[in-house]
Image (cartoon, rainbow over all chains, first blue to last red; front, side, top):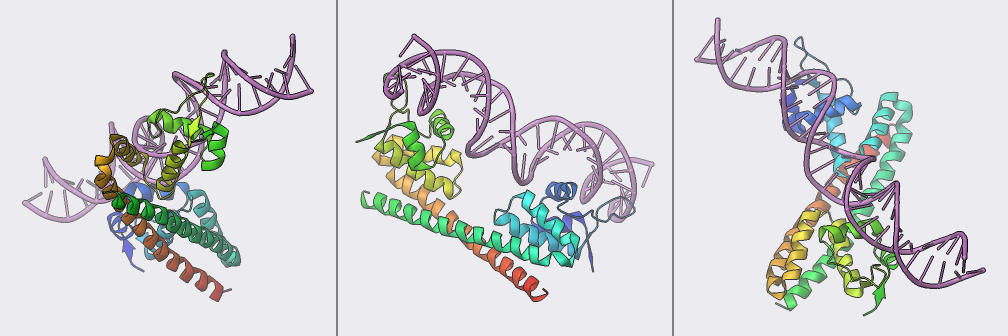
Amino acid sequence: MSVYTPSEVVEETGFSLDTLRYYEKIGLLERVHRNAAGQRRFTSEDVSWLGMIRCLRDTGMPIAEMLRFAELVREGDHTIADRVKLLEEHDRRVEDQIATLRERQRYLHRKISYYRSVL
Amino acid sequence: MSVYTPSEVVEETGFSLDTLRYYEKIGLLERVHRNAAGQRRFTSEDVSWLGMIRCLRDTGMPIAEMLRFAELVREGDHTIADRVKLLEEHDRRVEDQIATLRERQRYLHRKISYYRSVL
DNA sequence: CGTTGACCTGGAGTGCGCTCCAGGTGCGAG
DNA sequence: CTCGCACCTGGAGCGCACTCCAGGTCAACG
């Protein structure tokens, strides 16, 4: 288990340092370890958890729901069924997002064709 | 050319009345006609323009860019090439959004499978 | 004639998700 | 020894896109 400095985590995850601190403050990221000088030292678990957060955030999950998920994870293995339920519901929303995007894109394409036809 | 009351437009477009007023205020919607009592009466052009707005908004275009597009439309036919350019750039971003969503969804699916495997 | 309901205005307030800031610590390089 | 730099904290501020509110008008219905 290697250890990551804040700037390494910024590099790896694409989250800003302020965002990492914010996520820790609101409890989306469990209290991060500190070195003797009080500076954060992230574990690889922290980094992979942030990978999950990145996925959920990029797919539009609100922070409040990510917090619910984080809580389930903290509660231990007996919540795995609940996590599956939560992620599957989210997956359905992602599917809907893609479908809507595709539909709107068709509209966009029709509009572009129309404009091209009158050029 | 039929005429629509505010509540009809709300119904047709899915935008709230406040949002319609807001769009008019910021110039995304051209000054809407009024009846003798000062109440808004929308034309079918207004409604179809709102359809375009709906499409752009649902695909994540920021209001500032919709305003640029609205301005091009107001300037007349000689801006059609520019409009095509703007819409095509947007279309590329929509494509990227879909691609990102699909990739994140794969992550989600792997996670769900993993959870299912340990249930 | 009174009430209801759809609508009006200008402006303040909201929720989300960060982002920035001031002032401070500790460490390694020159 | 001094400098620069990465980092720390608590808290304020921001940008976006609405959303809500108070107080008012007008027309139609019973």
